Image 1 (cartoon, one colour):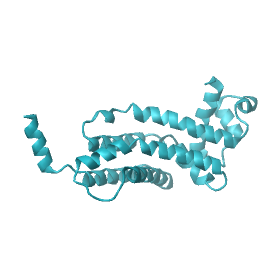
Image 2 (cartoon, rainbow, N blue to C red):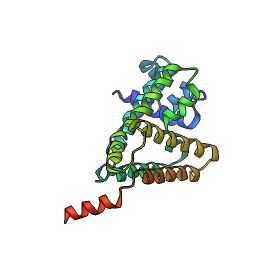
Image 3 (cartoon, rainbow, N blue to C red):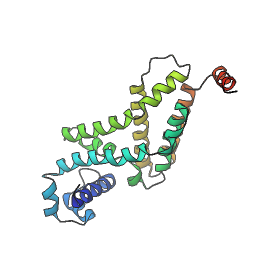
Image 4 (cartoon, rainbow, N blue to C red):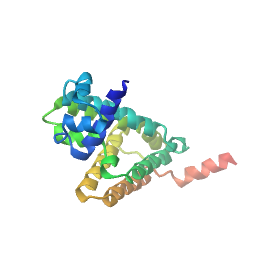
Length: 208
């Protein structure tokens, strides 16, 4: 990727998360990137085109972060899911703009006025949710859960909690309530997918 294009995309992620979509001007992005408007229009024809490209770039940035996270090495699927939540909590130690989601921020403003932007943000959120589905399916199989939930629906619910936590952080100008929400999510996973004691004893006996 051309260096100036990358600078514009990274600047967009930062400026939009701080100011919102409608308040962000092309001039603001260029200033944050240290580039001219001429350079901007060399790569993008409009602010909307930039917003869509930035959503794809956000997928790459966050996808790399989560794919390389240490929680994937946990043996139990429940532990991997809880590790995912712990990483989410660790990311909330950043400032509110740095900690929150580009796609979640922008879609709240643009979902009616910019359908193409809404679609790009939806793809981003759903794509990330799908990274949890395999572990959720494994947790269902490992536990005694016999309800009707699907891995897809629970993965999306997880993102609803995460995005809601971001909104609380913004509304209350701080992270405590957002962190509490993620703790509640962790409790829910533990209750839902607790491995029965009899199965744990059987596993230990086999190992011996």
